[in-house]
Amino acid sequence: MNYPWKTHLEDSPCCPPSPVIEVKNLSLFYKSVCAFKDITLTVNRFCVTGIIGPSGCGKSSFLQAINRLIENISGVKITGDIIVDGISIFDSRVNLVGLRKKIGLIFQEPTPLPLSIYENIALPLKEHHFDNIDDRVREALSDVGLWDEVQDKLHQSALKLSGGQKQRLCIARSIALDPEIILLDEPCSSLDPISTEIIEKLIIKLKSRFTIVIVTHNLAQARRVCDHLCAFWYDFESKSGYLLEEGSSLEIFDSPKSAILEDYIGGIRG
Image (cartoon, rainbow, N blue to C red; front, side):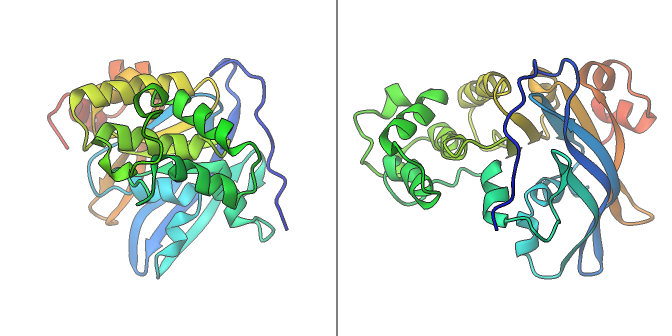
Protein backbone atom coordinates (compact mmCIF):
# COMPACT_ATOMS: atom_id res chain seq x y z
CA MET A 1 0.00 0.00 0.00
CA ASN A 2 1.42 3.38 -1.00
CA TYR A 3 1.30 5.95 1.77
CA PRO A 4 -0.27 9.34 1.00
CA TRP A 5 2.64 11.72 1.56
CA LYS A 6 1.71 15.35 1.16
CA THR A 7 3.14 17.66 -1.50
CA HIS A 8 5.04 20.90 -0.90
CA LEU A 9 3.20 23.78 0.72
CA GLU A 10 3.57 27.23 -0.81
CA ASP A 11 5.25 28.78 2.22
CA SER A 12 7.96 31.39 2.17
CA PRO A 13 11.17 29.90 3.62
CA CYS A 14 10.99 29.92 7.42
CA CYS A 15 8.38 32.67 7.53
CA PRO A 16 6.11 31.89 9.20
CA PRO A 17 7.50 28.67 10.75
CA SER A 18 5.76 25.63 9.32
CA PRO A 19 6.73 22.34 11.01
CA VAL A 20 7.35 19.44 8.64
CA ILE A 21 9.21 17.09 11.02
CA GLU A 22 8.25 16.70 14.68
CA VAL A 23 10.50 14.47 16.77
CA LYS A 24 9.00 13.39 20.07
CA ASN A 25 10.94 11.73 22.91
CA LEU A 26 13.09 9.80 20.44
CA SER A 27 15.69 7.38 21.78
CA LEU A 28 17.85 4.98 19.78
CA PHE A 29 19.72 1.92 21.00
CA TYR A 30 22.31 -0.34 19.39
CA LYS A 31 21.42 -3.41 21.45
CA SER A 32 22.27 -2.24 25.00
CA VAL A 33 24.13 0.91 23.92
CA CYS A 34 22.10 4.13 23.83
CA ALA A 35 23.14 6.36 20.91
CA PHE A 36 20.88 9.21 22.00
CA LYS A 37 18.07 9.65 24.49
CA ASP A 38 14.77 11.50 24.64
CA ILE A 39 15.23 13.88 21.69
CA THR A 40 12.34 16.28 21.08
CA LEU A 41 12.64 18.92 18.36
CA THR A 42 10.91 20.44 15.34
CA VAL A 43 12.19 20.97 11.79
CA ASN A 44 10.51 23.75 9.81
CA ARG A 45 9.63 23.52 6.14
CA PHE A 46 11.93 25.14 3.56
CA CYS A 47 14.61 25.89 6.14
CA VAL A 48 18.11 24.53 6.70
CA THR A 49 18.28 22.91 10.13
CA GLY A 50 21.76 22.06 11.35
CA ILE A 51 22.72 19.32 13.79
CA ILE A 52 25.97 20.23 15.54
CA GLY A 53 27.98 18.77 18.40
CA PRO A 54 31.07 16.65 19.10
CA SER A 55 31.64 13.14 17.76
CA GLY A 56 29.81 10.31 19.45
CA CYS A 57 26.63 12.09 20.50
CA GLY A 58 24.35 10.41 17.94
CA LYS A 59 24.05 13.03 15.20
CA SER A 60 24.42 10.68 12.23
CA SER A 61 22.28 8.02 13.89
CA PHE A 62 19.58 10.62 14.43
CA LEU A 63 19.71 11.64 10.78
CA GLN A 64 19.38 8.04 9.59
CA ALA A 65 16.44 7.51 11.94
CA ILE A 66 14.46 10.19 10.10
CA ASN A 67 14.10 8.02 6.97
CA ARG A 68 14.40 4.75 8.92
CA LEU A 69 17.60 3.70 7.16
CA ILE A 70 19.09 3.05 10.59
CA GLU A 71 16.74 0.08 10.95
CA ASN A 72 18.87 -1.86 8.45
CA ILE A 73 21.43 -2.31 11.24
CA SER A 74 20.91 -5.43 13.33
CA GLY A 75 19.98 -4.82 16.96
CA VAL A 76 18.70 -1.28 16.54
CA LYS A 77 15.75 -0.32 18.73
CA ILE A 78 13.90 3.00 18.53
CA THR A 79 11.41 4.45 20.99
CA GLY A 80 9.45 7.67 20.67
CA ASP A 81 8.08 9.05 17.42
CA ILE A 82 8.96 10.99 14.28
CA ILE A 83 6.03 12.72 12.60
CA VAL A 84 6.30 14.03 9.04
CA ASP A 85 3.44 16.21 7.80
CA GLY A 86 1.30 14.97 10.68
CA ILE A 87 1.95 11.29 9.95
CA SER A 88 4.10 8.96 12.06
CA ILE A 89 6.85 7.39 9.97
CA PHE A 90 6.49 4.29 12.16
CA ASP A 91 2.85 3.79 11.18
CA SER A 92 2.40 0.21 9.96
CA ARG A 93 0.97 1.49 6.68
CA VAL A 94 4.12 3.42 5.75
CA ASN A 95 5.80 2.20 2.58
CA LEU A 96 9.54 2.35 3.28
CA VAL A 97 10.47 2.75 -0.38
CA GLY A 98 8.09 5.69 -0.65
CA LEU A 99 9.37 7.15 2.62
CA ARG A 100 13.00 7.06 1.49
CA LYS A 101 12.05 8.55 -1.86
CA LYS A 102 10.45 11.50 -0.07
CA ILE A 103 13.27 11.81 2.48
CA GLY A 104 16.57 11.63 0.62
CA LEU A 105 19.86 11.01 2.43
CA ILE A 106 23.31 12.14 1.27
CA PHE A 107 26.26 10.54 3.03
CA GLN A 108 29.58 11.96 4.23
CA GLU A 109 31.55 10.20 1.49
CA PRO A 110 30.17 10.63 -2.04
CA THR A 111 28.53 7.37 -3.09
CA PRO A 112 27.96 7.39 -6.86
CA LEU A 113 26.91 4.09 -8.36
CA PRO A 114 29.59 2.34 -10.48
CA LEU A 115 27.64 3.32 -13.58
CA SER A 116 27.61 6.20 -16.03
CA ILE A 117 26.78 9.72 -14.91
CA TYR A 118 23.49 9.43 -16.78
CA GLU A 119 22.53 6.07 -15.25
CA ASN A 120 23.28 7.30 -11.72
CA ILE A 121 20.21 9.49 -12.03
CA ALA A 122 18.20 7.57 -14.62
CA LEU A 123 18.25 4.23 -12.80
CA PRO A 124 16.41 5.41 -9.65
CA LEU A 125 13.96 7.30 -11.87
CA LYS A 126 13.22 4.11 -13.80
CA GLU A 127 12.85 2.12 -10.59
CA HIS A 128 10.25 4.62 -9.37
CA HIS A 129 8.46 4.63 -12.76
CA PHE A 130 9.05 8.27 -13.66
CA ASP A 131 8.38 9.48 -17.20
CA ASN A 132 10.54 11.82 -19.30
CA ILE A 133 13.78 10.36 -17.94
CA ASP A 134 16.12 12.37 -20.18
CA ASP A 135 14.47 15.66 -19.20
CA ARG A 136 14.61 14.80 -15.51
CA VAL A 137 18.28 13.83 -15.71
CA ARG A 138 19.14 17.12 -17.38
CA GLU A 139 17.02 19.11 -14.91
CA ALA A 140 18.61 17.44 -11.87
CA LEU A 141 22.14 17.96 -13.18
CA SER A 142 21.32 21.58 -13.97
CA ASP A 143 19.88 22.12 -10.49
CA VAL A 144 23.21 21.18 -8.90
CA GLY A 145 25.31 23.06 -11.46
CA LEU A 146 26.72 19.94 -13.11
CA TRP A 147 25.06 19.97 -16.52
CA ASP A 148 27.54 22.30 -18.21
CA GLU A 149 30.43 20.29 -16.75
CA VAL A 150 29.24 16.81 -17.79
CA GLN A 151 26.80 17.16 -20.70
CA ASP A 152 29.43 15.87 -23.16
CA LYS A 153 30.36 12.86 -21.02
CA LEU A 154 27.05 11.63 -19.65
CA HIS A 155 27.88 8.04 -20.56
CA GLN A 156 31.29 8.03 -18.91
CA SER A 157 31.75 6.45 -15.50
CA ALA A 158 30.63 8.60 -12.59
CA LEU A 159 33.65 7.29 -10.69
CA LYS A 160 35.90 9.51 -12.84
CA LEU A 161 34.37 12.69 -11.43
CA SER A 162 36.11 14.79 -8.80
CA GLY A 163 35.02 14.48 -5.17
CA GLY A 164 32.93 17.64 -5.31
CA GLN A 165 31.31 16.60 -8.58
CA LYS A 166 30.51 13.16 -7.14
CA GLN A 167 28.79 14.75 -4.15
CA ARG A 168 26.75 17.05 -6.38
CA LEU A 169 25.82 14.02 -8.50
CA CYS A 170 24.56 12.27 -5.36
CA ILE A 171 22.48 15.34 -4.50
CA ALA A 172 21.15 15.42 -8.08
CA ARG A 173 20.22 11.74 -7.82
CA SER A 174 18.20 12.51 -4.70
CA ILE A 175 16.41 15.64 -5.91
CA ALA A 176 15.52 13.98 -9.24
CA LEU A 177 13.06 11.86 -7.24
CA ASP A 178 11.30 15.02 -6.03
CA PRO A 179 11.77 14.53 -2.28
CA GLU A 180 10.22 16.77 0.35
CA ILE A 181 13.21 16.53 2.67
CA ILE A 182 16.95 16.21 2.05
CA LEU A 183 19.20 14.89 4.81
CA LEU A 184 22.91 15.71 4.51
CA ASP A 185 25.42 13.88 6.72
CA GLU A 186 28.57 16.02 6.76
CA PRO A 187 28.44 16.42 2.97
CA CYS A 188 31.60 18.55 2.75
CA SER A 189 33.89 16.79 5.22
CA SER A 190 35.97 15.11 2.49
CA LEU A 191 35.93 18.04 0.04
CA ASP A 192 38.38 20.83 -0.72
CA PRO A 193 37.45 24.46 0.13
CA ILE A 194 36.29 25.34 -3.40
CA SER A 195 34.02 22.27 -3.62
CA THR A 196 32.75 23.01 -0.11
CA GLU A 197 31.78 26.54 -1.13
CA ILE A 198 29.91 25.19 -4.17
CA ILE A 199 27.97 22.71 -2.00
CA GLU A 200 27.14 25.40 0.58
CA LYS A 201 25.78 27.74 -2.09
CA LEU A 202 23.78 24.82 -3.48
CA ILE A 203 22.26 24.11 -0.05
CA ILE A 204 21.14 27.72 0.30
CA LYS A 205 19.65 27.62 -3.20
CA LEU A 206 17.80 24.33 -2.66
CA LYS A 207 16.07 25.37 0.57
CA SER A 208 13.51 27.31 -1.49
CA ARG A 209 12.26 23.92 -2.74
CA PHE A 210 13.21 21.40 -0.08
CA THR A 211 13.42 21.09 3.68
CA ILE A 212 17.07 20.41 4.52
CA VAL A 213 18.65 18.87 7.62
CA ILE A 214 22.45 18.86 7.75
CA VAL A 215 24.87 17.30 10.22
CA THR A 216 28.12 19.25 10.36
CA HIS A 217 31.17 19.50 12.60
CA ASN A 218 32.12 22.73 10.86
CA LEU A 219 30.72 25.52 13.01
CA ALA A 220 31.63 28.18 10.44
CA GLN A 221 29.65 26.22 7.87
CA ALA A 222 26.71 25.94 10.25
CA ARG A 223 26.74 29.70 10.69
CA ARG A 224 26.86 30.24 6.91
CA VAL A 225 24.10 27.89 5.77
CA CYS A 226 21.77 27.07 8.67
CA ASP A 227 18.62 28.91 9.71
CA HIS A 228 18.07 26.81 12.84
CA LEU A 229 20.48 24.76 14.94
CA CYS A 230 20.12 21.78 17.25
CA ALA A 231 23.17 21.20 19.43
CA PHE A 232 23.71 17.60 20.56
CA TRP A 233 25.99 16.65 23.44
CA TYR A 234 27.17 13.50 25.22
CA ASP A 235 26.21 12.65 28.80
CA PHE A 236 28.97 10.57 30.38
CA GLU A 237 26.72 9.46 33.25
CA SER A 238 23.99 7.95 31.07
CA LYS A 239 26.49 7.23 28.26
CA SER A 240 24.18 8.63 25.60
CA GLY A 241 23.72 11.64 23.37
CA TYR A 242 21.06 14.22 24.08
CA LEU A 243 19.74 17.54 22.79
CA LEU A 244 21.63 20.24 24.65
CA GLU A 245 19.99 23.29 23.09
CA GLU A 246 18.18 24.46 19.96
CA GLY A 247 17.34 27.83 18.47
CA SER A 248 17.96 30.08 15.51
CA SER A 249 21.53 30.20 14.25
CA LEU A 250 21.79 33.75 15.56
CA GLU A 251 20.61 32.69 19.03
CA ILE A 252 22.93 29.69 19.21
CA PHE A 253 26.05 31.53 18.08
CA ASP A 254 25.48 34.92 19.68
CA SER A 255 23.65 34.08 22.91
CA PRO A 256 23.81 30.38 23.82
CA LYS A 257 21.98 29.56 27.04
CA SER A 258 24.26 26.70 28.05
CA ALA A 259 27.80 27.24 29.32
CA ILE A 260 28.73 23.94 27.68
CA LEU A 261 27.53 25.18 24.30
CA GLU A 262 29.20 28.55 24.79
CA ASP A 263 32.52 26.79 25.43
CA TYR A 264 32.00 24.49 22.43
CA ILE A 265 31.29 27.37 20.08
CA GLY A 266 34.29 29.22 21.49
CA GLY A 267 36.56 26.24 20.86
CA ILE A 268 37.17 25.55 24.54
CA ARG A 269 35.28 22.22 24.59
CA GLY A 270 34.52 19.51 22.09
